[in-house]
Amino acid sequence: MAILLDPALRVNLDVGAQVLELTNEEVTRKWLSMLPASEAQAAIHVDDHNDICVVNRSGFQELLQVSPYSKLLDQCVVYLDEAHTRGTDLKMPSNYRAIVTLGPDLTQDRLAQACMRLRKLGKGQSVVFCGSLEIQLKILHCNGKSAGEVIEVPDVLAWCIANTWQSTKKSLPLWATQGIRHYRRRAACATTYGLPAIPSAILETENRSLEQRYAPRDNQYSEIPAVLFHNVEQVLFSPFKAELVAIREKCQEFGLLSLQDSSLHEEQEQEQERELQPENEREQQIERPPALTPRAHFVHQNVIEFAATGNLDRFSSAFTPAFSDLLNISAGARFEPGTWPQDLLVTCNFAQTVTQTQNMDQYLRPVHWLLTIRRAHNGITCVIISPKEANDLLSIIREKQHVTLHVILHD
Image (cartoon, rainbow, N blue to C red; front, side):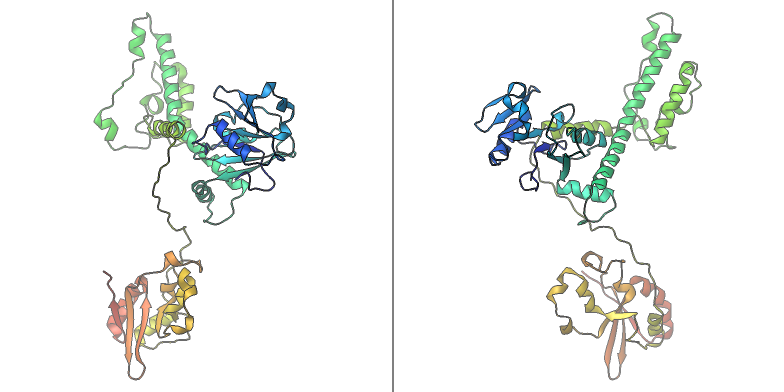
């Protein structure tokens, strides 16, 4: 990816931890081998001992600090893995361009720290973001865009900010629990006389009953400890009332329902799996069609007249040839419009399900309701209608009996 872009990229900031199969040294050696000698003479990375090293074209590796390339960074490319996109300081040339990888749940702090490895960012240095198809879909969904739209820098930043909010919310139970424990211990030490009594005052219940685990919640904060929401006036905690109220308000602000939230533990396990156990997996993911604005249901006056009198106005906008809808689907290019019969009609309410008129493959109604009328010389006239129209016209059809309503069942 870095080789194909123009202008060429000189720095790879893997803050998204997308390189899992290779070590830092292997990445730099492979990258250097793919570049012509005129573009780079060496590659810089951080080794397993957290030392900044440089590898030249002959394969020799040494510390950057004692290498002649420490003053020739313009002849080097740089690779920094996720762990070293924070705190690593390299004085790169002002014309360097970096690629920043985007990974799952990337927060704004990590992204900002990675981008700031370029100390002259915006003053000659620049970055380009790169993410997998999965990450691109998440960014589009976060910004309310549909698949295929262009992703811009503000979209990436908005996605990272949303991830930061979710990460903060997941960490809140641990923060609140630690705050409660801290003030409980301070209160116990301040009010208890003698060391033997202190441990019993700060003991916590380790096990939870079945009722506590699975009973329905009576209100939004039923599982939050009573000291936070009901009994702040307890004598034991009265010296720290203001601090506990601050914890309570922060929990309410984030909509925290339980301090026994397992999401933080699960998130930590997932992070460990991504970092320590990289392996190739094939997981089936169902991609739903993008959400579109539905068109409001309506029954056209000419459709009502057809049901009541049997007279069909073929020039009305209420009716269109049924097979003309094939032009709005992906297979429409394979059909010749003039070869299909024009006597089978559909109502506009049946044909128009969403406001969009292109790529309607996923938004065509199934055919279940059909109005017919037999004429002496013109044969049978057939009109496909929507379930809404069938429901609204049923009483008229039964009363007037000019047309026949058919229901079509599919196996």
